[in-house]
Length: 314
Image (tube, rainbow, N blue to C red; front, side):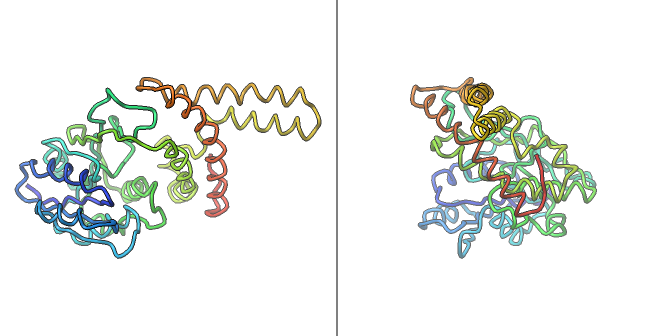
């Protein structure tokens, strides 16, 4: 079997890292090394856990983001294949063997695995988890790449510090002519974790990098089904425009009319966010309040990206 280097970026999550390492140690793959890259955690617990569990431990001199941490792991790796998993994930028993099996084909430069929440019973509207059951998302919590291909491509682009760095790398691989198939048997679990009420607002600011991604890879950006401006926000933007026109023109009736698409959007967004989730009264109220801010924050963020990267993208 091919030698594989498992690279795990981590920061200030030692207990989650321990669970992740335990799941990898039971893979039954003989030729394997595990590399933990610490993005400058606040204490030494991650170092102790990684070394006690037989992993190579590397520490960044200052926080540089997960993409640069993975690049450090790529440099250290000695395997033919580099498998990426996040510290808050847990690998299924056959994760590595299922992903590695596809590299017998020399045209395969990478493999995308399946990611699911471990349980869906207690997922709340603000829980953080990742789900990828169809492929085409290229989330680096569950990806395999040939190391020589990664080196030729230059690894993860540092211009994408926290978002889109995984898609951008996958797009470059596809443009270079390699295949990047989806393997559902290469399963990783992403257990839901309690998230803050502010997290969805923070995530909306990450779309600042969508114009750069689209400028570099317009074909694959659209094929992925990506939209810098969420289609579900259009009603809110239409409402803003109508209300502003009414206010500037002194047509109060037009301003009232603009409330209709805005209000419809502000009802739809929290309902969508809460649908099928375990919702308390506080969660429902906060979902409504948070979604008042998300459309304007995301629009302003993308506009800033347009100005910075010189690419207009919807």
